[in-house]
Length: 421
Image (cartoon, rainbow, N blue to C red; front, side, top):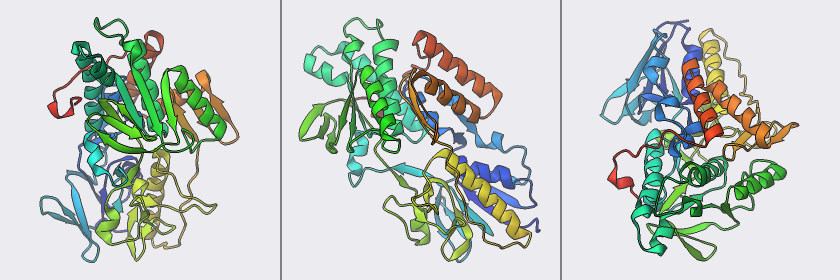
């Protein structure tokens, strides 16, 4: 094995970071590139957006996380392309970095199904910046409603629309409803926050479509018990500063959040490789790019077929498993073992929470709902946080919310561009 083998990893998300941890003890040189200086625990990002957690509780400096690995160099930068023939990645400042092995773990971004102009009015939730901007919009909507004298305009300010009934949409809807009906109750003098309307719009026939129908039905009922209006079977056809249109009717709303879809990073475009409709690069069974055995693609950036049918889901456990698998593959290659061992994803289960006392969990043969599922959901998420300090901080925050209904991260930071229109 050569200590001069240079591995470039693009992206310090779940997949990229897991790869670095698994390969760090090998005699290789690793360069980890990310356009942000922090690793983000995305499954809890919606809790920052809805004032339950602070940003520092779900994000950690990348340099701190890899500080013990002396063969890992961390660079802050944005990759804009790959020269596969010259084995170089290109950066936005004109720089280039050569590699012997390349791991692309560049994640996903919002997808508006051909209506990118909607992003201005319906921001998505993928980064800390997204979360703090949405939090600002939510809180400013209540502040503006407190000063609004026109009842029609006030009603629009107190109407919150979430587009998309997947886990993120369901979790956002439930938490926003609790924020309005419980946390903020009694804090305003001119508005009654109990009259806040939270509307979840889903184009499909049920929320949480990836779950079993019985669990989807439970989730819908749990949302309705929180006074969330669930609109099914109608896709949004228009979205602007004044509201949304779905099912042929307009709903005035000044705060809209997009949770309906994502698109992969442009990795497939960089390499001129085949991609699916969401832009995910179609990889070989060993997660390499067809024709480029020195380039691996993992996480949301890759479309990975499963032997039993279907595709590997774009969730954190899948990305972590892929990162560990690629590290083992690279180690084997450097040791002279080029035997193909296809990636095998092991699905542990599906989880989603609805507010602070209900959740749905599908472990295959075992399924849970309600209070017990919420505790199992919380324990599993705390377990995967990094460091005892952060696990304790999140656990205490949740315990406080659970017992009092109060959320401590209700700060409105500056940013005029994110105010409700």
